[in-house]
Length: 388
Image 1 (cartoon, rainbow, N blue to C red):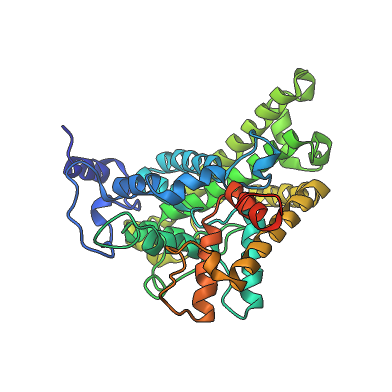
Image 2 (image 1 turned 90 degrees about the vertical axis):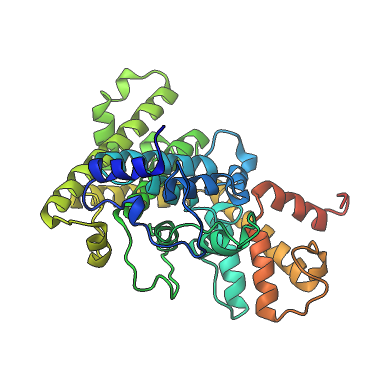
C-alpha cells in the first residue's frame, strides 16, 4: 500500500524543482494530524468536493440562466472544465496537480446566483449602502474559512495556505484578486497561476460554445477573429461539415488545443530562463510566469472583445442579466425591511445587529442561493398567488 510519505517522496522525484510539494505546505489555520494515505492537497480537494457550497454550483449559472435549457454551462460544469484544463497544463509543466485541482474546484464557490450579473447586483447594493462591495474571491475565502460548518472543532474547511491564497488572489478579466493581512506579503504558486489561465481559457471557449448553441451569436460574428480563422483552418474549414453542431464541437476543441499548446511552450521557455529552484523562489518573484505568448494574448483579447460586443450585449443576454439583478435587488430589499423573514439559523432573533452586520448576513444568504432557489424565493414574495 502506498502511504502519504510515499506520495510525498514521489513528488520530490517527478515534480519540477519549482513545483509546490505537499510536504512543504504551510500550516493550516488549525492544527490537525496528517493523514496516513492522503497528502494535504488531496485532503483539501476532498473537503471541497464534499462541501455544501460545491454541491450548489450545479444550479448556479454562467451567462445563460437555468431556465434557458439544460445544455448551457453551470458553475459546476465550468469548474470541472477548469480543473481538467488546469491538470493538463500542470502535468506537462511538472507541477502539483492535486494543488491545481483543489484551487480550481474551489475558485468559484463564492459566486452568487445568476453569474456575474448576481455579483454586480450585490456589489452595487452594498456600495449604495456605503459598505464595502461584494467580491466573489473574498466570499469564496469566507466560505472556506468561516461559513462552511462541517467540523466540530473549527469553522470552515481548514484548508492549506496555498489553496486559500490561490483562491483569494485568483485573477482573470472577470475576477479581481483580494487579499487579507494574513496573505498580504505572500506570493502565489505556479499552480495558482495555472488555475487563473485555465479559468480564462475555459471561459472564452465555453462562452463561444454556449453562444453558438443559443443562437445569440453565429459563425459569421466571429470571422474577424484570426484565432477563430486559425481554428477553422486546423479542422479543414467549414466545407467539411454539413452538421453545424459537429463544426462547433470541432472548432471549439481546436481553439482549446491551440491555446493550451501556446501557453505550455511560452511558459516552459520562461521557466527555463528564470531557472527557479524552489516554489519559494516563485512566490518571492511576485510576477506572472504562466502566460500566453504576446501574439496569442492579443488574438485572445480580440476574440474576447468580439464576444463582449456580440454575445454579452445581445438583447436576450441583456434581458437575462437585467432580470437577474432585479430579482436579487428585490430580495435584498425585502430582507432589509424585515430581516425576521430570514430563517432563524441565519438571522438570530436573540441578537441585535448593526447595519453592516445585517447587510453582511443578508448578502451571505443571497450569495448562497442557487438560481432556482432565488427564483422560487422571489416568487413567494412577489407573486400574490404563490404559496409561502
